[in-house]
Length: 148
Image (cartoon, rainbow, N blue to C red; front, side, top):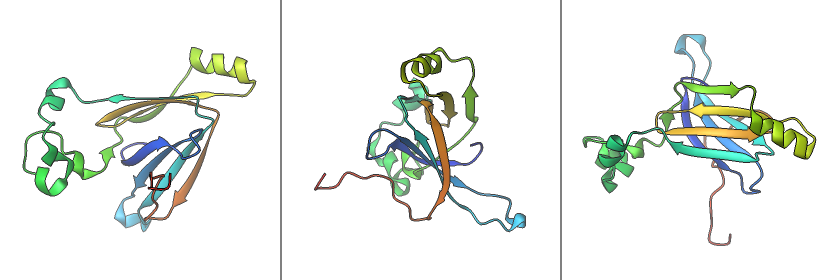
C-alpha cells in the first residue's frame, strides 16, 4: 500500500473488521487496468485515525466549499472534495508492538499492527489477519440507510 489512492476506510457494518479501499494503478505501458483493491483487516481490536494535516492547514480548510471539488478547487486550503488521498509514505508494519503482544495473550491468536499514512489521515490498526481482494469499480462500502 504505497503511492496509490486511499478512497475509503472504516469499520464494516458488522463492526468487527476494518476495511481500507485503495484505487490502484500501474504504468499504462504494462497493460494492467486500474481498479479498486479491498484490504479487510479482520478481528480489528484497535483502529486509530488522526489527522495528518497541520493546524495551519486545518484553519485554512474550514470553508464548506472545500468539501466539493467544483467549488473548492480554486480556494486556498485542503480540498476535501477530491474524495481520495495519496498513500504516502504509505503502509508499514509495526514490529515489537506491546499492543499486539497484549491482545495475543488475551485472545490466544496472532495479532499484527500496521500504520497507514496518507496526506490527510494517519491510521493505526491492530488486527489478526488481512484479506486482500479486488472489488468492482462501483463498489460501495457500508453506508447508513434509513432502515438501519
